[in-house]
Length: 154
Image (cartoon, rainbow, N blue to C red; front, side, top):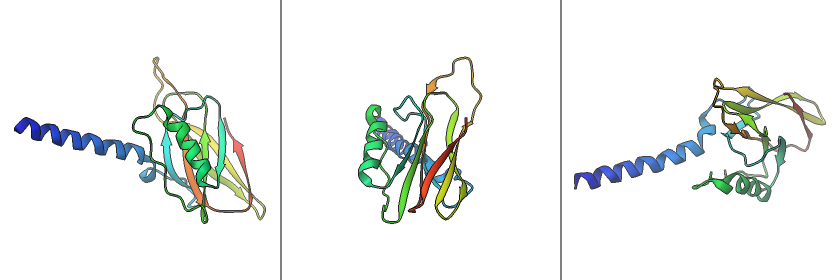
């Protein structure tokens, strides 16, 4: 009986760990600018090349998450976004060695355009056995009709 209780407790704890990992980005360090809010940051985007995405509808967001969740069981849950008020910006860095994170920040804003700077930041030391990852970050920001351009920094 004691082992059954211990097994059940361990099972419940492990299930909650998956939820915490999936929503890790919500409580982590956000961008310096309050207009950009980090929703998710992870190491495997499912893509090999760098890309930036501007998502203004649920269909495109579900499409991105289905690509990310192709090899995950359980998959990362798709965030609930009100696309009448917000939009999503995604930055995938392409293949990198482990320990790097994709970052976005608003560099400049004018009446017609918002310039978003991208960067790849090192978070831990690279060792001789560095793994190949494809980090990505998902940010939300208030919906705007301004043109959004990315200043990609290497």
